[in-house]
Length: 219
Image 1 (tube, rainbow, N blue to C red):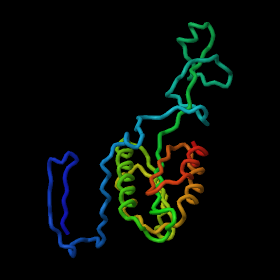
Image 2 (cartoon, rainbow, N blue to C red):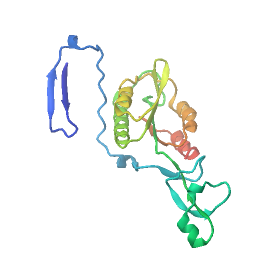
Image 3 (tube, rainbow, N blue to C red):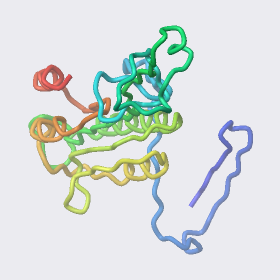
Image 4 (tube, rainbow, N blue to C red):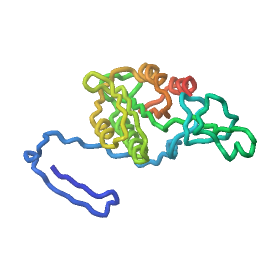
C-alpha cells in the first residue's frame, strides 16, 4: 500500500510504502476527493454565529434588540439601569430569539429517475459525492454541525448521521453504497418535511420537476 501524507499547507509531504500484512486493520478506507468548487458556486454562504428568528422558546440573553417597560415576571438581572434612569421608570432589555446555523446535506444516490438497482452512471454519482465532500469540509471547518442523509443503503438502513467531525462524516460518505432504499422523489417527500431549523442542500445526479415543487412547499 502506497501512502502519501502532508500538512494542511502542503509544505511538508511524506510518502511511504507499507506492506498490507503489517497493518493492524485490514480495511483501508479511501476518503472522497472534494470537488474543485467554492460554496459561492452553489449559491451558498457560510456565516459565523447564530441567526435571528421571529419566534423561539427561550430568548437569547446575548442579543439585545432594544428595551421595554419592566413587568413583574421579568428578572431583576435584566433591568437596563441606564435606560431606566433616562425614562424615569424601570426598563428591561428586550432579547432576540436565535438558532444555531446547521446544515443538512441530502445526497441522492439514485443515478437516474428510472433506475433503482445499481448505478448506471457512476461518473455522475462520483461527482455528487465529491460535491458533498466539499460542502462537508467547508462547513465543518467553520465549526458547523452537518447532518448527512441519503437514500443509500448501509446495513439495510438509509444513511442519517449528524456531526461536526469532518473525518467521521467523510468516512460515512466513503462507505456509502450505490444500492438505494427508496426512489428519490419518495425519499425526499418523506425526509424533507421532517427537517427543522436547518438549511437544506439536495445533491442529486438528476433533477425533476418535483424537486422544484418540493422547494416551494418547504421554503
